Length: 527
Image 1 (tube, rainbow, N blue to C red):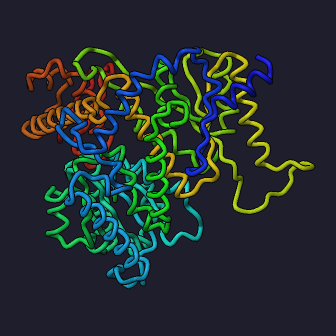
Image 2: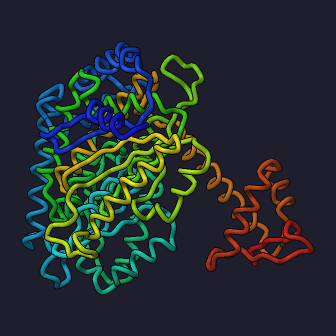
Image 3: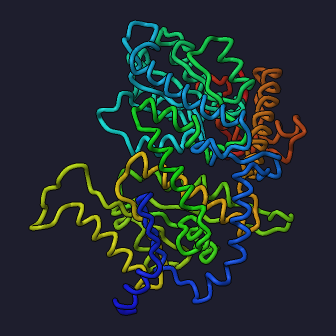
């Protein structure tokens, strides 16, 4: 295609939204000439569904729950006075607690004048959003640094604790984030953190605050033990859409970020994406482009180091919301969009080679940021800065992919700020909701995740039975198949093998492995 054609197409298909500082260019997506006309009726239904959701309709049908993350940045939208009051009261509580921490009114009990770092214990949406915001906005002058326990990996937690250092635990505030209070990974992280504080001679309760539903096991524990504070989570906010709730706002506020600006960006983006003009509503445009591109994968390439975690954040938001086996009518559909990516121009030296020359099973979303840095840049060549090169690599990659029949779209923002992050978060939240309506699926449940949790519980139960069997037969060695037969779990022999190998590999577990002629002839015992 000649340059004039592309320029004309760009001007036609660039959605400019100056009030929220965002442009969306879909000109390099190769939809047909009647595409938007054909999508008018499905889009109308999606707009109607979103309008009903914002007014309080039960949108999570499986769990019979409302979906209210849009109310968080505009409480006036909430369907009743109680919810409006809860949102505004929670925001006031966040600000009050943060001020008390920063000014030393809430302080460590062991001599330090104030808390200087925060450890977030959470998983999934309770970590990914706060991690994205921390990575995007952090600076050396933040009043508090941040670290995360976001998995149940003991070695990973040891590494985090080593970076903090035992001496600095006395200045560390812990936020334990779990809606139900029963999420195993978060519970394990809390217990590991508690032990680390105990080993340092510190009272964990005087360093901890809970973010959870009222009346949950975690809420009761925090109240009984006298934790520093307890913040509410609501059943109408899902984990992957919780960044504008206390889940995201409290860690951001403690780091010194402008949470009012983040909320304002999300609120203004919500307003912009209520427009029913398909060509100028950026969230609907995104959803429509996904409909055009599916079943291809979504590659997200932000050309900004501060946005390097955006892809991880979007993996959960998009894949957990849209990866569904059945539609709303119960028909098997196998919907979903796989999301991956890193950052530009790092990917010039990683997998862009395959994107241009390999299997054409993807589309790209570029994220471009106009501002290079807060101050002026040096020239690395006459009239050229390092930021100019970043732009050059972005535009060059975009052109190289398009020249080889690869589709892409580009989101442009002015700078990475609390406000622009709020805009991006709200943009993708609404795009996910629109796409789900267009595809006829439920974006707000996660049966696959729940199935994985239940399957993990079965493994832990089998391990408990296994250890009891070995303990009752101390000194006697068994092969895997013998144990499986004794437990009546022959079909679980492979699972038992993995459990036994894991137990034997870790000191203090009490299980000894004796090698055999082959790997599967090894025997196991508790001496």
